Image 1 (cartoon, rainbow, N blue to C red):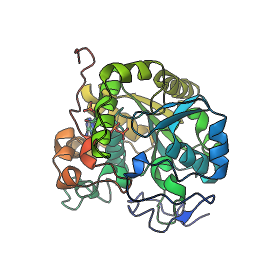
Image 2 (image 1 turned 90 degrees about the vertical axis):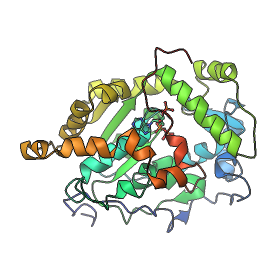
Image 3 (image 1 turned 60 degrees about the horizontal axis):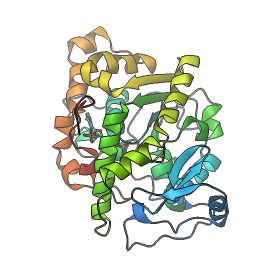
Image 4 (image 1 turned 135 degrees about the vertical axis):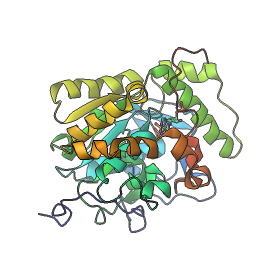
Length: 333
Ligand code: PAP
């Protein structure tokens, strides 16, 4: 049994996973002059060769998108996906939070982090990590953080159960995840709001990335509906996990952003139960559930100093992950 498995109480995974990372697969070093999310140079010969055999289209932010295992990835993310598939060793107690981009990833990460660490960090604690760190730092993405830019993340500082985020489609999950009983939580959002959110997000990244122009709504809509967007096609991504949740309900929990907005208490309780850590009557009476919801609310998180001014070490400002946080699916753009 590893040391991480022997710790019964889930505790915070320290945020500095990349500091002791080691280079993977002889990837080329990337330049610091342009934001990392625009770079395409840090790929291995193996990845370059693979790309030559893949359908490729113009990207939304970085120059290219490549279709691999049926889904579209930037060059940099494709390299990270391959590294992640090759190196990640799942543990049975792992929790993977899965989304397509802009489906409420940040919110889900905050909620599950608060939920799983509620004994160590009660809501009324002024030093709760969510008050000083962005959810993407506390719950890092597998492929977008721990295996990005030629790194293999250091997992020695994680405590069990380890919390990760991922946008990987089910088909591309590392085999060790598919073969383990670890938990998968999938958060789906209606495609209209997901698309609008993605359109704003990618244009913000373009603006910051060397003053690139705005992608028009028409151009982006055409791409999105053809499936050529980050981790698209949207419906294929959703349906793979939907099917898995029907076949393995004890392992895959399928949630909807709209339900979380409408009945947050019901959904967070469902999450707690799914992880085998239901709220006790005493916790409910003491306002633990309400406290978690308040802590993780759009209003609270988006107004924290860290989320107004900080950024990921991959270049994205934290404030780009908070825009409106509403269900707008029936409104015209
Ligand atoms: P990611 O997939 O790139 O990590 P993600 O967090 O899924 O991004 O998307 C951000 C969306 O979630 C934004 O939606 P919008 O553009 O329609 O406004 C963002 O506002 C929303 N969001 C972020 N935090 C919360 C929250 N605490 N509650 C509700 N929505 C949120």
